[in-house]
Length: 77
Image (cartoon, rainbow, N blue to C red; front, top):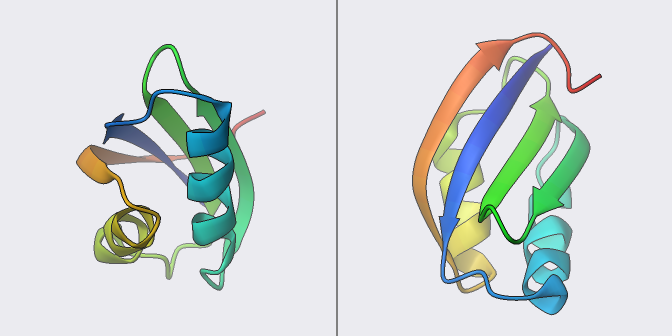
């Protein structure tokens, strides 16, 4: 299990966060998602097989830009 810290560009409101979360949930291996709109940041807990490009593409599909994605070992809790 690993977690990703994602900086998301163009995210302005809770509707934006909902669209991003919905798109990320389509990725096989996503366990938990936390979106912080004011910080323009997403935290994702996922299985080890989830790649940076998977996250970036899901965010792009929702209409936003992943400015940076940093993986760390561990979970969100």
